[in-house]
Amino acid sequence: MRLAVMGAGAVGTSVLELAAEYGHRVVAIADSSSAAVDATGLDPATVTERKRETGSVGTATVETALAAEYDALVEATPTTLGDAEPGYSYVVEAFERDRHVVLANKGPVAERYADVRAAEAASDGDLLFEATVAGAIPTLSTITDLGPGHVTAVRGVLNGTANFILSRMAAEGLDYEHVLAEAQDLGVAETDPSFDVEGTDAALKCVILANVLYDREYTLADAAVDGIADLPGSVLELAAEDGRTVRLVGEVADGEIAVGPRLVPENGTLAVTGTRNIVQLETASAGQLNISGRGAGGPETASAVLADVGRLAKR
Amino acid sequence: MRLAVMGAGAVGTSVLELAAEYGHRVVAIADSSSAAVDATGLDPATVTERKRETGSVGTATVETALAAEYDALVEATPTTLGDAEPGYSYVVEAFERDRHVVLANKGPVAERYADVRAAEAASDGDLLFEATVAGAIPTLSTITDLGPGHVTAVRGVLNGTANFILSRMAAEGLDYEHVLAEAQDLGVAETDPSFDVEGTDAALKCVILANVLYDREYTLADAAVDGIADLPGSVLELAAEDGRTVRLVGEVADGEIAVGPRLVPENGTLAVTGTRNIVQLETASAGQLNISGRGAGGPETASAVLADVGRLAKR
Image (tube, rainbow over all chains, first blue to last red; front, side, top):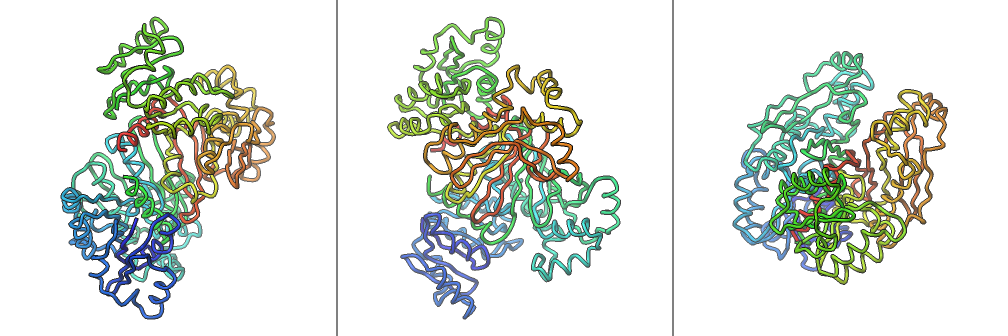
């Protein structure tokens, strides 16, 4: 497949670097203000070097990338709330041109699910978005295979930054502020960590899961969200005395979405450590399925994007 | 899809019972010496009651079931070694009629992979066999999505009976013979448990994984297999003193297949308890993926069969 990649951050550049290995070709890539386009396929090294040296992936305009002859648009611009722009408009434009769309950006399917599905329905193109939930973990494809109606609940640890902080607090007996500073030094937490530690990122993933499970539109406003920023270290000590620990758990069940710190057994399935994620599916006839792995990272998320591209290529 | 189900054990009857929920219809089911056929769809309650009362699913012949007008053959007869009969012949007959084949029976793809793939290649029908490895755990579909070439190793706990025995031996400090007798009382182990405790069942699953990963034919003869029947309880005690335990682990890596008892961290990912299974995939760009769940059982395995049927229906 010929791919146009919108967004040249960690995920976009990883898609550029890995596409050939999966038998696909990136014919256009755009960052926020420039683009590189080559119908014969872009050379990853050239593009990333130019980006590093000049701050731009190329000399073409973003519009040129959108107008390129591609089969699937890979939307990997940053997640934004509310109108989900500019990703949303890129998605709509691709569908209007009857192209497929693969999302790494959560915004369009978390905040404007009905609009995006309507644009897809009016198009010959199809939408897939495995990479928006838990990075490398095959969550949405597993739900699709089981049939959404056969999944009775989904819960999981869906934010690696929050999980790193909670794991370190519990293991070292350190307080939140101390571990957050450490996570920021390591590059695990951003300078403004609010998206991760306040539960917003995990909640967006749960909203996407709810949209898929119940086939109707939820948005962030429908989720009950509680973060870990106010969690005192003493809670983790109390939990440890009882063989438990705390994880930021997101849950979708009975039409409701909730995210917040929860007590879980210390050596239990949900107590993944470090930046790992886990997704737990409760099913009607197959019992409980647990899938753990890397929930973020450029190559990890790109592998989910390219799995979606592979699925579309088979249709 | 219209399904013909060969085999009326736990898996076959669960497929019969669950098919309608997934939007499919069982038009024929056969046990070893009889069959029931109804083009409008068989009633599960009628068939299972007749089987309970008379020992036969119906009054028709097995050949009538094979000749029925179906879209996909579900092969769920018992796994046999060597010639993999009668399952192998049923598969070939379905392909000769250009029908799809979904396997729950491991024999054809563990012992005669090249023959089965050749029969598929000469047919308009397609082959899927998710249910042959680790029951409800989506193993083969995940490997297919990642691309077999991007999976560098697969290991896992693939036999629930052996895992139940090892879990109980470690937790209760009991010896092998004692726990085996308990497992037989509970129906977790069969009267002749050799297939499970000698590692044959886990090895067949690894052979299937190797066939898919390397796209060439392996058989049971290519696997280095060691079981748990000779494992002294003292090994588990020694392991526990070091924070470890023993699991029957199957591994496929670098073109080799090995199954045997292995020391694993007591609270580590591979140390699933009871009859649960776990599959661990090492990938080139997405890190390690772990999937745990129910590796056996009628409805659990039937859900994997019906997921395959759903995939074929979309083609």
